[in-house]
Image (tube, rainbow, N blue to C red; front, top):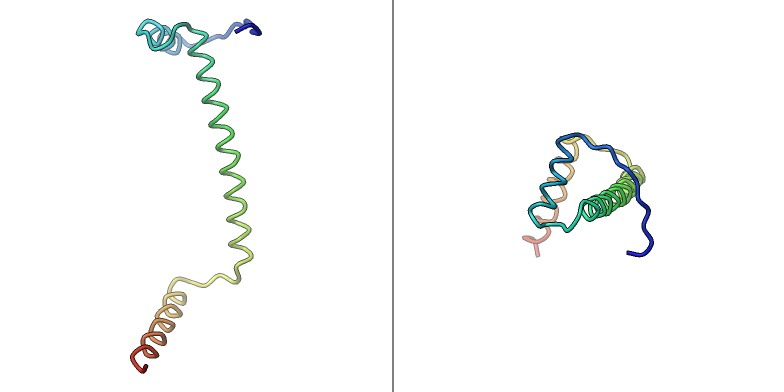
Length: 93
């Protein structure tokens, strides 16, 4: 890793113990490796949340553009009427 910048990070005692344990267990070669992975995962999570927010906005717009809202009982009545009509036309054929 030829291009690195050393920085100092303040951690709670619990976080510092977790970091040291990750290195001590052999899961990571160094504290820097633990921090780099944590930052990569943090960035991925932020990107995912941003995309999820955009998708939610698209779904919201789709819902708004889909027409007037119908109350649950009215919607069920409409569905049942369509089902009854479809069933009646199939039995008549």
